Image (cartoon, rainbow, N blue to C red; front, side, top):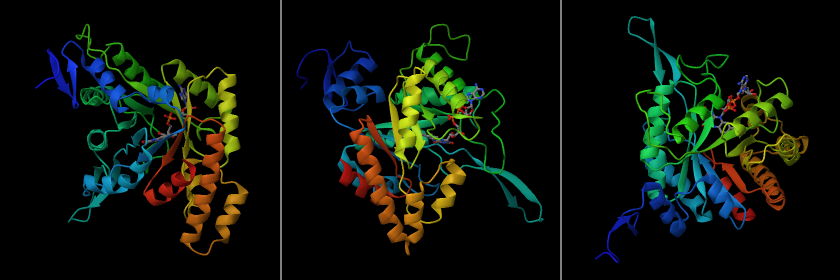
Length: 352
Ligand SMILES: Cc1cc2nc3c(=O)[nH]c(=O)nc-3n(C[C@H](O)[C@H](O)[C@H](O)COP(=O)(O)OP(=O)(O)OC[C@H]3O[C@@H](n4cnc5c(N)ncnc54)[C@H](O)[C@@H]3O)c2cc1C
């Protein structure tokens, strides 16, 4: 029996009929700390928060692969879980006649489904990464409508990179070029403005958008100053927080946060953190992510005889980094788990 008249059972709680969807969700969140915007998580926090980032499983793997990865990390009650998006890759498949056929392959599909599964399974907010690359604006609009229907109100808005076999990023015809253009599309939908001009007063979405920031500069930007100006433009266009690229020297993060403040960027800046776990990463990470490895860390890793030793050095480094950032008052420690949940578990256990 319902405890009071005119109520509905929503997410396990009885709530009055007259509440609209978002209002109902916000009542629910007061009870469960779930279905909140990233900015609300940060505002309500009484301690440093922790969040994790996962990759969708490779095609052919099931959702349990992801749950196996996340299960141990849920011990730390992460405030949310980010899910990366991977655009399709162009491949050349050999045909029986010896010629090659060009095919588009998506190795890690299903970001929207995975976010819904995570929210349903763990009762924790999921943050899908949405990118410009490979999407027309209309396809993006449809994806955002799906997210809105699912009650996924957080998105990390990104441009994406060029496909592996191309040198420069090219937007789709009728697609968004820069992250700021995609952000504008999200903001428009939050105001009930859709691409279809026939929709006169569309339903307003309720997205909280984050954007990427680069303590060591985005690799295409001519200098950090111009990169920061572009970042400020994203914040002025509606980004409510910044999540950073990984870095291994906290001073770079502190300098970046200071420079942001000096040019009037006042939204929360969330440090993105990743452990080094093998020698190969000393060259791979700078090449792919355009980040520096401090000499002390690279020397220590070079001395290691096994991957296990490297993992130990990388773990200790990340623990120290995390403790220093926590003491400096960052709102959240965001960990890129990328196939290394045990290492991240070890780090967070020592930090939180
Ligand atoms: C936290 C984080 C998560 C990420 N997750 C993913 C992911 O899930 N999937 C994925 O594919 N990639 C991901 N990336 C990588 C990201 O897509 C790339 O770094 C990409 O090259 C840039 O994306 P952006 O959103 O920073 O682009 P933008 O903000 O658009 O900037 C790209 C470059 O263009 C410049 N620029 C910006 N606006 C303008 C303008 N109007 N005119 C001229 N120049 C301009 C900037 O200075 C910068 O050099 C992530 C990066 C970070 C930091």
